[in-house]
Amino acid sequence: MATRETQIGRWRIRALNDARFALDGGAMFGVVPRVMWESLTEVHDDHTIPMATTPFLLEDDAGHVILIEPGMGRRWGDRQKSMFHIDHSGGHDLLESLAAAGVAPSAVTHCLMSHCHFDHIGAACDESGEPVFPNAQHWAAKVEIDAGIESGHLRRASYRREDIEPIEKAGLLHTYDKEVEIAPGVSMVALGGHSEGVSVILIRDAGETACFWSDVVPTRHHVHLPFLMAYDLNAEASFAVRKKWIPRAAAQGWVALLYHDPDEVMGRFVELKPGRFGWKAL
Ligand SMILES: [Zn+2]
Image (cartoon, rainbow, N blue to C red; front, side, top):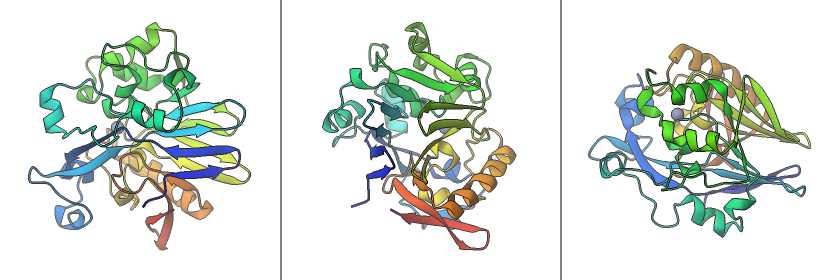
């Protein structure tokens, strides 16, 4: 059973469940030829590969209840449900998962959104379109909010205005440009590449660090530096970000929190040989 809970100083970190789904394997590995990735993962008949959405819960003894990445949510039409194989059965539902962790939606103090793609923030609003976490400060990079609201964006299909507007209307939305500290030792850092404002979320305390990688490193098969997704808006920027951050995380032994991996969500990046990075489960 893969590890789903750890502690960084004062912060208890737990993996939650939101959904299982699937995306086109070719799109997930960009220019990497299929012969190089098909042995890494199961591949379905329609060429999709299994994925998950895994939000994380951060709690301390000072009353912070921080949700990292709300998740895919349930506001999906039949076509999308079948195209993306969206599956909430077997406890893969954010609210069920939160309840199992003993947390009511009203108790969440912060909801951190690494970027505004639909599979990351869809669960922040319910099926009637209302914010799910009425007392939470919701945080995202300003450029992500702008991209989510603008209609002519190249990656328009990855954003839904209705994921953002209700949160803004309720006065719950907070934005940052480059970096913001949310709570002691917890910060969001906008890196760009995958999307204009995609951010990593760092949890640092007592000399240890954990990092939520969002779509900078979506699964354990994407630790190798050139394994970029075709979804990345700016491949060169994404590669530059990864080349800087993945070696740093490996050298310093950071705990990695992965959002999209269907099997292993906590581990470490390791340097297998000079310049070649891989994954070791926690
Ligand atoms: Zn994304």
